[in-house]
Length: 423
Length: 164
Ligand code: SF4
Image 1 (spheres, rainbow over the protein chains, first blue to last red):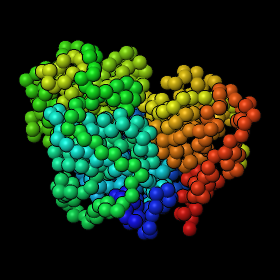
Image 2 (spheres, rainbow over the protein chains, first blue to last red):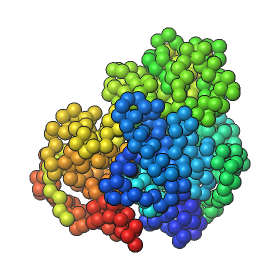
Image 3 (cartoon, chains in turn blue, orange):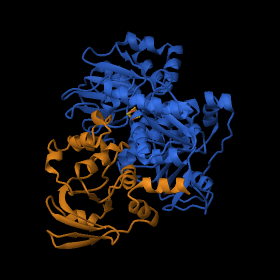
Image 4 (cartoon, rainbow over the protein chains, first blue to last red):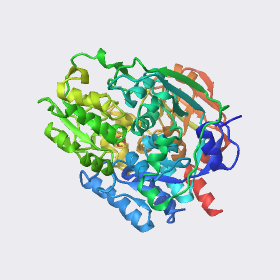
């Protein structure tokens, strides 16, 4: 019986045959944490009396959630993590100003590679599945265990194969495909499963859309969201700073022709229009044209879901020569410093600033209701992020609608949820 | 191992943002975490809970963010176990890893109401609802997870491995 992508990577690491449901102990190639999950993991290690890491070259620490430090508490947590990184000579400690949001930084820097296993103390660790890595979110205790032993226990997941076919309409992107999928599957539709995305649609889209879809696999409850390796993957992986300097070997995990899938879906997306996830769940998805006169107070474009360079370009194309509606605040959040730099090369910050937007540093801030754009009572926000649970971005009564970057930018100009076609 | 307690009942898709809102995610101290547990669902949650209480939930409990402060805060406030129709996977492994016992039993959830008295026989695979006078079974933990639970969480396993 053949293997799916997830089974192939897990079997290779476990050094034995695997079947879904089996629990395996596997070596991890990278164990990553942000400052919040890292602080708890460090506390655990201290409680356990462990003072030595299995391999500091396989540890990655990225302070991003409440950084640049929003207050004294956040500064204190970041300091705990920074001191830990120095003490243990952690190879991938990425400081504020040289990093950004973990899930954008990691694949673009080459910190994880195809065929590898990465665990991360953040649920959207699955983003790296876009480059054919088995990347999955775990908790802080798992991270502490992985740092201490170099291993993690994983239940071999069943796999789900989702196929997308057709020719996409204008202003329809990976975000719309994944929201459409969430509408179909629901927030628990792929619980414990590894999703494999495939189909000819991905020939029309850049890598950034794969990242967006892998990122939101967790919104369907999945353990991983994986793409096959192709020329686009190779181009991205082999252009990363780490690859260029270290030339590391990596393996490619392709699914076998006779692999077994617990769930299969095929979506013909030729007629799909932009999708919107309405409050208060990412699976409460409607067609954009079904939303009439939803007035908005704030728009957030970017973060780890849609903060890739193509996303910023799509938003800038809408803003170019236009200004944000007077009643709307717009915050642009590049996924990482590297992406912010690319945006500068393309002249995008000027477009955003001329349009009356905040061109923010790369941080999780607004997405988690932390800082740099928290919502007040009953405020309504259009956001390109991945979650719109009650209170996610601020006050419990505030509302968040999730869209793609072009729709978010168009809505910012219109002052209500609307389509780029209306401009 | 047996757990006995009074039920606090919640619905489906209880996400970790609601269990421990983002604004408190910088906390690492148990007493502080306990104060804010589930406050966005029920502002008086921490006051209503007595040590040993059991949460009973519908499907997909603990979905969303991987934040371990969610199960930690539940443990800190005095919750002894969670019984749900199903759990989101990161919450499931976090709970096992930190030693918060959790059980899947849709049948039990269907008949159990707030305030009921539950008794759980962890390794016997049995839940008794004394208030309703009904008994339910749940699938036993796989041997590996049973080992983690018996060792009080992942810590025991890690220390054992390092001691080898
Ligand atoms: S941007 Fe939002 S979803 Fe992404 S890692 Fe940060 S808090 Fe999580």
